[in-house]
Image (tube, rainbow, N blue to C red):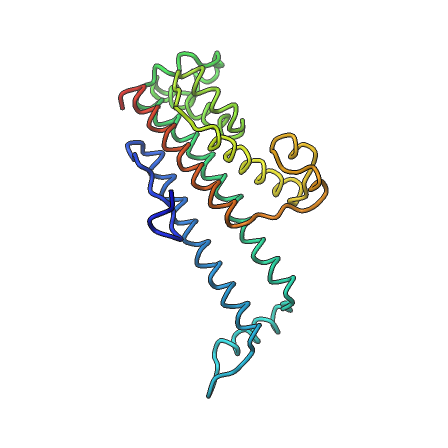
Length: 247
């Protein structure tokens, strides 16, 4: 279904979860930044393509020349393409970070309102009891510890935790799940291998084997589809958690 507001992110259907509200706010701000930066880069590329001055002083070209002279900016076509790709990379890395934050915050929200979910957690150290001043503080520390582990455990393990340990079983579209896994794999590839496609990445995704050893190219169409899928997964997961624990 096409977005009713082209260029802007979809609003989640259900905002009953505070974690989902924060995720929506963060992702919307990031999307706006991406769109503004994209348009500025297009304007920059267009100015380089024409280099025609209007009557009188042309402040834009003057500023471009100042920037290029001061920072040694290369103005070739390939360099401009690399800047667009860098923008894709930055969006991907930050957006996945926000999604991981959402997963951790959703668990914290559930644990705060229904602390009985902590009863299934691993045994705690005696030192934790002595260092805490109240039972509520102990509960908060246990919840925070689990939230941190969820942040670093990966989406598959987090979803497994919600389904098996919390009995939160959202109805998720298989294509949406595939795109979320793919987006996270791309983020990890960018962070750990500078975007160069590895065997591990090919195992985690359905990308063509012929791309091995080449730097990944993130198209805007791919980014749009992954974004929409991640938003739907987050909304369904939050809705299922709220329904399960009646909060």
